[in-house]
Amino acid sequence: MRLDIGLIGATAIAGRAVVGPSSRYDDVRVRAVAASDPERAAAFAARHGIPKVHADYAALLADPGVNTVYVSLHNSAHRPWVERAARAGLHVIVEKPLCLGPAELAAIREAAAAGGARVVEAVPTAGHPWQGAVRAMVEDGRYGRLRSVRTDIRFGVPAAGSYRERPELGGGIFRDCASYWLQAVQATVGLGGMTGRGTGLFGGPYGSDRSFEARLDRQDGLEAVLHCEVGEVHQARHTFVFETAEVRLRNFLLPTRGALPLNLVVRRADGARQVRAFPPVAYYDSQLDRVRATLSDRRPDDGGALERAGARVELMASIYQDAVRASERQTR
Image (cartoon, rainbow, N blue to C red):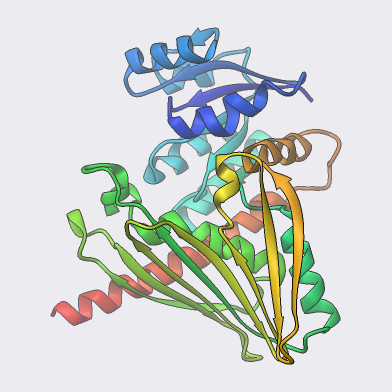
């Protein structure tokens, strides 16, 4: 299947995640763009050589030259435009998070089924070989039972007034980070049987969360914890604690900047240290390659992409609401 992509949103991430990587494939073309500001869409199209600019998102969905859309709007706008595109029979690539809760997820599932469309959440870190390597460690028990997973993420201060500061638009540090954490846990140990809770510091502009602690627990004692915050020094780290070793991955988001290597560092209880090095990868290139496979006949049985994203959305929403309720009780 050839991907003829229309961009819903003339955003910097659309340039990095779709426009740039698409130039490396013969079967992918960015055909059109629309934005809330038509002049911004026209400037984006001129800058990136996109042939068509639409006056609004609805016109783009009606373009017969588009069979796939990429949605990179603020988080609260994901559901309506994913739903409309899927119901129109267009495949959809949507920036993480897919949507903000179970009701929105149900609407997207219904639209995808009605339109015969596939919906893929864009989580660029998914599919990296390190995830399979850690899963193998869990499954073969070489370091004993996995006791815990900890993820630490620190992002820069959002631009004043941006949607990342607006809870009603789906902003806040947790919703910005949760997909990376949940996808990593899902790929390495699975999300089945997990229950979640959270605590947020909702002291940012407009009541946004600028620090958040989330936790997943499983009945066998496994725990997965995310600590995320806004700060000056970027951080992105996973730590897997086994009975006889600690496995750490630093800077796991750096390949969003280009083709960069990643290393798993294993420190065993006996003091031995081992480094598992992975070749350089550019996340957005590999993400588009996975999307091509998912949306093409080369992987006709991969209808689980939406279900895997849905499991992440449901846990994200549950944890966020738990933190909101806890914050409200404290302020009464």
